[in-house]
Length: 422
View 1 (spheres, rainbow, N blue to C red):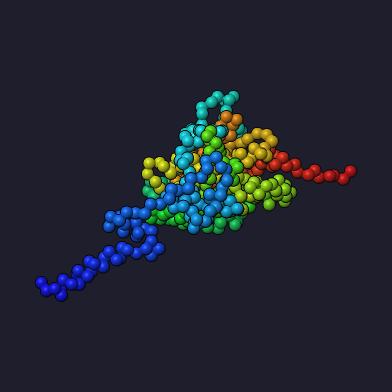
View 2 (view 1 turned 90 degrees about the horizontal axis):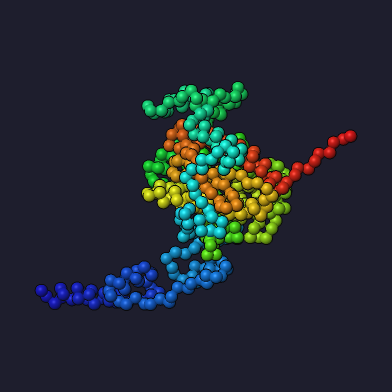
């Protein structure tokens, strides 16, 4: 072989060390690491990470800029003064299971069922019993299908499904009802199609919220101006209200996704009362547990945590933990106003298409979350009609017993007496 044929290859080999000799400023961090490892060049030592003082309660470590922050495997999401976070992944808490929450100063517990008790000693109030009995009937399908669209529903059911007589409910005689019910039926079919697509295409939790869960809530609450559904994915609870562990360590902010809230602006006198009551220090200027704008003035009645598909039930455990911490912060806020009794508060976990109801009770010993029943499923027409009926029953509870309790026991609001002429 001639020298001329060898020269180019040799020159190429001689140039290889020159390519790896770039300065750290010229090579991205990831490529620099791979080059050092592949060519057995000692990787430059880095200074030890800065560890925050465990006794300090200052949140300054969360507010440092990304330019000055030390490189770490995880970096907390930056908080804004309004209680929402910047766009990005949620902060991760070491508390992943409700079992861990038993070590907070006031234990937070999960129970898979309500305790069996005698008629004279019940965990539930009369209001709780009435709500749960109605929801259990709805879960069987009782009275969920409008009679006016019975034929349309039967036409789209599979061979194994049918509309039983006890599933039907009579409609109003108003001439506007039938067109409205048929439009609703079209919306139901569209939601089923979206739900199946989200499942088959393994779409994200955010896609489920946008394409299925929020449209379903808006459909259910249409015609109920006193209550509304809100996407609160970026809302964070106030730090002062988060549960504390026995080691005096503050659990990280836990988020939930959706919320059904009462709109007090429908009653101007009460709305003004809330505005004055919530005019507190900036860190607690809210009627709920978060400074997120949609939550500052509108009392939260039902909170909803949504999850995508995951194996091993991990998401279900984390969802329970999130609901317990979120509701615990809310209850702490209520105790700063509370004048008397406490209610049972419904909460929902949505796992892809399946909606499950829980009841959270606050006692002197603990905050306990009870699993109640499956409300419905968005993969079928019958399942969505169950959900519509259940959500409308929860809306009635929100603007009825819950709102009355909130005005009287939380706000201590008394309607002004109307003077009568002699």
